[in-house]
Image 1 (cartoon, rainbow, N blue to C red):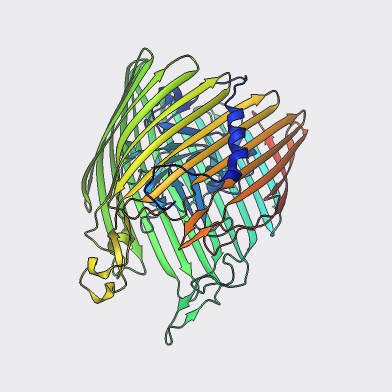
Image 2 (cartoon, one colour):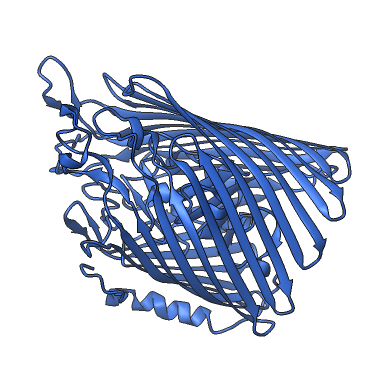
Length: 630
C-alpha cells in the first residue's frame, strides 16, 4: 500500500479463510457463561458492560493451542500482528492495530513489565506455562494505564489457588524436532485461610541459523541458534476474614537465546560475525497486594511491586542493560448500585536504567491519577475515563476516553469509543550515546472506533472498524541537521519524525456444532506514514486465522491455519505465507493424556522478518498429568 487512500486491500488467497469466518457468523448453540474482564476498566465488569474492544484467551484455549510461545498465541487474535527475528526464543515485537511494539502496555497481574531502555516488552522471555488467562484490550488505553497504551493493553493473569480448596496438580513433558524439549509442574490449592499456586517449567531447542546467508548487514553465521528458557512463579494469599486478602506474587523468567550478529573490536574494528552471539535475559516481578471490601459498595486495593529486566547481549564484549520499575498503586471502586461503578486510582511509577552504553545511570518517575465511571441506563451503557500523568522527564499529559454501548436485542449490541493516547520516549531515545535526544517529545494519538457484536448460546461474532491518528512519531532521524550540534550525531539520532494513520477492521467469530468448535478471525490493516503514504514496516495489510477442534470420546483433534499477507521490511516486501498446525490428544486414563502435534505441516519456508528464517516442520510428542481436588 503506497498511497494515502483509506481503502483496505487484501490478497485473493485469503478468501477461503474469510468465507470460513462468515460461516462462523451464521449462528449456533452451546452453553455460555457471562465473561467478566478487568482490563477494560481496571475493575471486574461483565464483558457486555465494557465499551472497549476486549478479547479473553482462557486457560482451556491456552492449553489446547498449538502456539509455540506467548507471542504466537497472541497473533491468532484479530488486530494483533507479530514480527520475530527467527524461531521461538528470538526477539519478538507485537503490533496491536498497527501501532508499534512500544505502543503496547503489558501487565502481569496488574504489574507493568518490560525494558525501559528498549521501550517494549521482550515477549520471548515469557512462558505460557505460568499463565491462567490473557485479556487483550485493542485500542486506546492511556486513560487507564498511562504512557504507551496507544495500540492497546495486554494483561497476563497467573495461576491462583483457592482458599479452603483441594490440591490441583498438573505436570507435562514433551519432545520435538530440532532437539526441542519441554517440561513443567504446576500446583495450586488452599488450606484454611491460605491459598497458593506455584509452577516451574523448562523449554529449549537447538534451532536453526537465525539469519539466512547473504543478509544485508553481513551478520550471517551458519551455526544453529537455539534457546533455553526456564520460568517459575509463586503466588500466596491469606484471607484472615471474608472479603479481605493479602497476597504475594513472584515470577522469574530466564532466557538464553543465540542469534546472529557482528562485533567490531579493537585494534582493527573490522566486522566479525563468527562469534556465538547470545542474549541472556532475566525478568522478575515481585508484588505485595491487599484487596478488601470496606463495605457492600466500596472495595479498595493496594499494590507495591518491582519489575526488573536484566539483559546481557553479545559475545566477547557484551553490552549490558538493566531496568528497574517500582510501582505503587492505590485503587478504590465504588458501586452504589448494580448499574454504576466508579473507579479512582493513584499510581506512582519510578524507573531506573543502567547500561554499559550510558555514561551514568538514568532515572525518572511518574505520578498519575485515574478516574473512571461506568453506568448503565436501560439498554445503554456509558463509560468514561480520565487520567493525568506527571513525569519528571516528559512533563504532564492528560488523556481521556469516552465509550457507549447499546443492546439492540438480547443477542445484538453496538458500541462506539473515542480516546486520546501518548507514548513516552524510552531511555535509549533520551540518553543512548550519539543517538538519544533529551528534548524529544512524547507521541500523541487520537483514536475512534465502532463495533457490532452478536452472542447467543455460546456462539459469537464481532466486527470493529477503527482509525487512529498519531503525531510526533518517535523513530530514527537520519538527517543530522535535526540532531544536537555534536559530531557524534553525524549519522542521525532519535527524533519526532512525522505522523501516521492506523486504520482498519477486525472480524472474529466462534461457533460450536455438536462436538466441533470453530473459531476464525480476519484482520484488515492500513498502517501508513501520513507524510509519504508508505506502509509502515512489518505491518501486513491482512491476516487471517481459522481453528477447528473436535472431540470424540477420549480423543480430541485440532487444526489451526494462519495466513499472513505481504509486509514491507527494509525496502523489500516479504512474501505472504500460510501455516497449518495439527494436533491430537488421547485421554487414556482420567488423569493422563497423550498429546501430539505437528507445526508448520507443509514445511513452509517463510521469513518472519527480513533476512530471518523460522523453523520448518516440527513434530511434538508429549504426556500430561492433570488432577483436581486431591
